[in-house]
Structure formats: structure tokens, C-alpha cells
Image 1 (tube, rainbow, N blue to C red):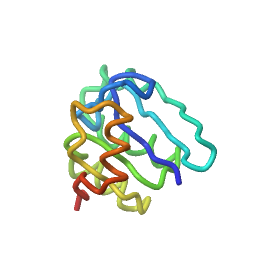
Image 2: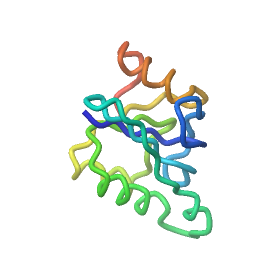
Image 3: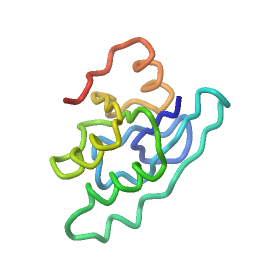
Length: 113
């Protein structure tokens, strides 16, 4: 299973970004291979409108099974992600990626509906 995290940095100790659309990085963890990788999303800062859908499209292209984020995506971005059949978990703001992953495994994050 591939898990994506919205983060402020590219590593396990990076803090989860509460924002979805304007997150600095998307960190991907492949549970099968144990591989951690990241995608720089900081170019989105200069976008006046549509940051959420653009970040959602980037996630759609990366193909994770799960997204772990802070507050969750806005309406337009959520629509794109729902088409991808992506399970979205919220409530991870201010945790590290590793802490958010542990919280997910323990079932203590909320499923975004």
C-alpha cells in the first residue's frame, strides 16, 4: 500500500502540513518496499487560485491508496481525490510523518468524508 502525506519537508521527521492545497511537499511511503520518497510542491505557492485541485491532480498522478493530512482538502480538490478512490485521513497536523503514520496504524486519525 502506498501512503501519501502532506508535509513541510521531505523526510520521516518532517511536520505534517495542516494545509492540503498549498502543502510544501508530498511524502510517499510504500509499505511493501519500505521506500520513502518525496515530491516538492512549493511551486504551488505562486498560484493565485486552484492550488487544491492542482495538488489533488498531482496526488492522482502519483497513485497512492491513502492520504494523511492536517485539515483535509477543499471541495474541488476533494472531488478530484474521490474519483481516485483515495482514502483520506485527517487530524495529523503538527505530527511528524512518522507520528502520523503510527496514528494511522493505530486508527486514531479521522476518515475524511
